[in-house]
Length: 390
Image (cartoon, helix red, strand yellow):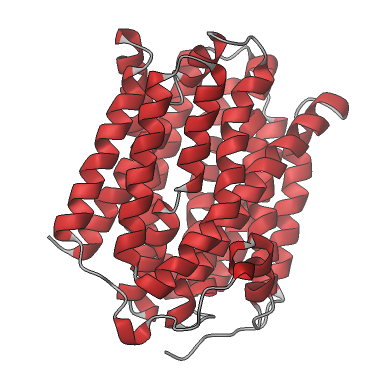
């Protein structure tokens, strides 16, 4: 089996494992607490642990190769899911997400693997596999979780663990190492490398990466913030029903999968990564304002498809711009830093959105988020071109 096909299957099972818990996690938490904050803490703990661990895993991938790091991280995910399924107390659920976050190097390591085996002109297309995995996974995961949850609330966690163990077998038997010894980082890992802020600072000081990171953080901040309050906004404004909200998720997942598989490479080859990224960010600013202003619920369906398509262009294009700005030996730490920044925005974005939603006005994250998307686009637009010569 082709290495990229194996990586895609591993990423797909990772996304299914993450999203399979969406329908049942609130019910499991309610066994021990009625506070909504305790439900959100599952995400916060996972994201916070990932923030501190991702750069370390990326650094280890640059030193020891992608394959061993991927094996450890996927196996760690399996352990976290088993703990979640066993449950028994709220702190056990939190522990499971802590374990999962610490070992959550699956996506960042897979991204570095893709960068290793892809020629620069093919990176945007191959990075698109990440979006396809998310698109398909976000269709299969919640649907499977809903069905299994009807049987037993713990069943989705154990199925997620089984999928992670299957990924371990795929990686062990079918995945070759992508980073030869002669291209690995040789400098010793220092204590400072365990500090995610140090890794982020070191990467951000490289030519033009600081602007890319700022644009990426602004995008993730607004994207995560809007998504964290979208369900509440649609319920309060349109009295949306659960099946309608689920249908929106299916629309989003199908759109992401189709756009990544069919359109990303065509647009990038025709207009280049920077132009596509800038246009997608401006487009998301427009779609956020459109959702905020929509007078009837059914307009949300095409707007969800539009926004999902636009965000699907943003991820691989900015990722390719960043990947092309560093050497082969720095791909792992770059992906780790990118994952850490994403985790940090997964904490800060929802916190910001919740505050402005409660204290400014209902739907405030949409028009504020539109301004943030536009700012990210402007930062990318003025960025100087820089590409590392391999």
